[in-house]
Length: 203
Ligand code: MG
Image (cartoon, rainbow, N blue to C red; front, top):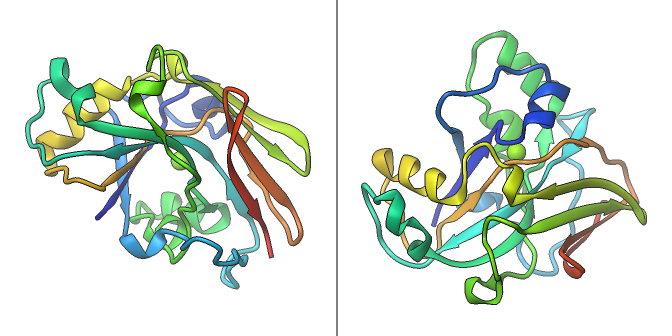
């Protein structure tokens, strides 16, 4: 499987990082080794001094698809969950400045923990899914799929023009504003509506 991540998909987050509004979805990838296995502890990697959480809705793909028409794109979603697109912000700033790829900042081992997935049919409206992240009990991020610049359908159609999607692939759909640092002993808890779908202790 592979992990595709959309960047710059919520206006207020683009503004907080002083980025440009994109014309098309911006995406990058994380390898399979970025998944944090169940019950595996999460440690802050030694190569960063500024590790940021980015809480995102994550789509799990249910079948093979290439050049997917936007009209049918939602048929390719099996379930939806939450994930953290962990980012070594200090390294990312260096990469951006040098016009270099982001892998050392974004694609390292265990940089993409995901929680429990909820079957697509349990959602009334995929374009109105609210989610939030709490750090040590305090609300730090709040988003809704209706505020995405590029909808799930647009993302799937666009990505599949370039890369074949396969069953089990994950698409991180971008983070809303409120990204910030984590340190040892922090507790991250993610919610889709009122349902807790993700819990992660930082070691
Ligand atoms: Mg992200």
